[in-house]
Image (cartoon, rainbow, N blue to C red):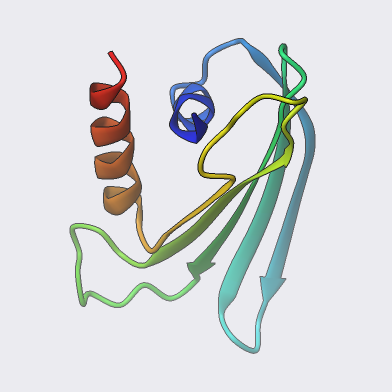
Length: 105
């Protein structure tokens, strides 16, 4: 279950190691792009790409736009579903994680 791996990253648990981190600032579009890759103890590799506007507009101060894509790079033959998940802000990601993890307790 993808939510289990994302939750471990979000909650900063110790069951993974960081493989790479890259940051890119595009001044023309005022977007910061970050890509992170993690290796879990079971051999699964997870990648996250985030895009954040450097100029935040107060359209929705509670949860500004923050495009997030999580994807399994290596499943190590584990049935992980979905293999890719996209969110348009952190609130949506938090809600999805809460619902996914509550359904699998």
